[in-house]
Image (cartoon, rainbow, N blue to C red; front, side, top):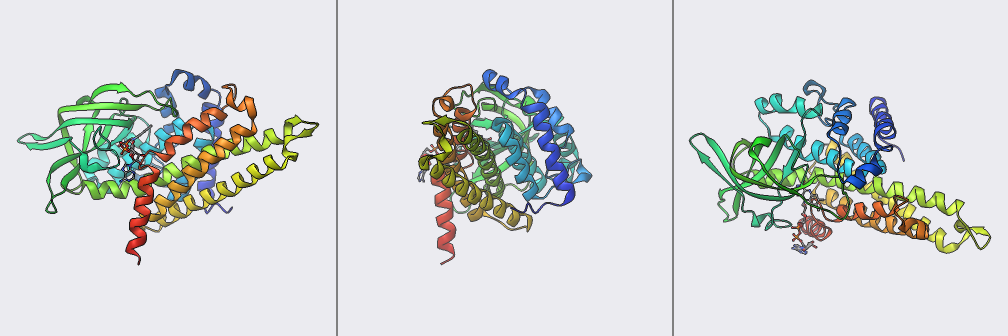
Amino acid sequence: MPTGLDERERAFLRQAAEFCRAHVDPACEQWEKEEFLPREIFTQAGNVGLMGMLVLPGLGGQGLSFVAYAHVIIELARHYAALALDIATHNSLCLGHILAFGSQAQMQRLVPRLASGEWLAAWALSEPQAGSDCGGMETTAVETQTGWELCGHKTFITQGRRADVLVVLAKTGTAANGQKELSAFLLPKEQVQLVRKIPTYGMKASDTAEIRFEHAKAELLGQRGHGRAQALIMLDRGRIGIAALAVGIAQAAFSAARQHAVQREQFGHPIADFQAIQWMLADSATELEAAELLTLHAAFLQDQGRRTPKESAMAKLFASEAATRICNRALQIHGGYGYSRDLPMERYLRDIKLCEIAEGTSEIQRLVITRQLLKEV
Ligand SMILES: Cc1cc2nc3c(=O)[nH]c(=O)nc-3n(C[C@H](O)[C@H](O)[C@H](O)COP(=O)(O)OP(=O)(O)OC[C@H]3O[C@@H](n4cnc5c(N)ncnc54)[C@H](O)[C@@H]3O)c2cc1C
């Protein structure tokens, strides 16, 4: 498949792969056991430009196209998905939100430190009563004489405990249509109370956190009352990142399964000779290619400056569900070895499930797609 990347982006992608071979592959099984990513790996990622991929060089970033960014997330996810998730969230949701809606002063102050990896960022929308439906949001921001103050509770926040800066969505009143008025805020880590790291089924080393705010001093990000619209724009981009994550995990699972099918012999033949295995490989290869095409297509449209609610939702929906099937088949092709924790097949299957949930579940993607389809009638 043509990558659509220029020479500089291809070189960056090669460098990302080299970074993974040198720093991620040797350590990731240990991180998985410890359910923890060392801070150092983000510094190292920053040193090779992975923490500011979409930031223009003038602010210390790489200025990659969204297509190139998607390719890099695919590459990272092939190696270790929990790290890819944290890096994708940092680049696309958090830095992306500041780049899209921050003032010049906010950008100058925050972006270079985030793009270099000196600081980490988190993006906090979800709450105990506001998951698929942000209308349940209870976190409230009040404007006082000394600035904005936030009180509330956020959950499932990637990098929530270790972020130096958080983009937080909060209720600031009631909109003209009767819905809650939402606005986005910037919070420094000193204003955040850390509740716990949430133990998860997959993506174990990623810092999935529950956090609270009590009269936390915050800074408005973009215009008051535009939080809901801003979040939807960010999710259009973030969902492409989750689709890329799914493609990367599925690529790793598929290539291991194909290799195993050729090497493993039973009944005097490589198991790849059996039609049952061949059909699993054929279905997986086909779905994988379709998932990658949908993902890169949505990324390409983002590069054209388009809003992509339907295309992002389709990419995330198809890529995550196809990748779950691919990882399941890959484990099956490995038999008992796939089920053992000696191989990463069981990790792929645990990690991939997150892609059907985060940044909107598959059910919500179907709602988004249908809403767009019906507008087109
Ligand atoms: C590891 C991890 C990392 C995350 N990182 C972040 C982050 O960095 N920032 C952040 O803000 N959030 C984050 N999230 C939260 C994630 O986006 C939410 O979990 C997700 O949006 C679903 O919300 P919920 O868990 O409250 O499920 P619910 O909304 O309670 O949904 C439960 C079930 O009901 C279904 N459902 C709900 N409404 C409908 C409907 N209208 N029609 C049909 N079915 C419906 C859902 O599809 C799902 O199957 C993360 C989650 C996880 C697990």
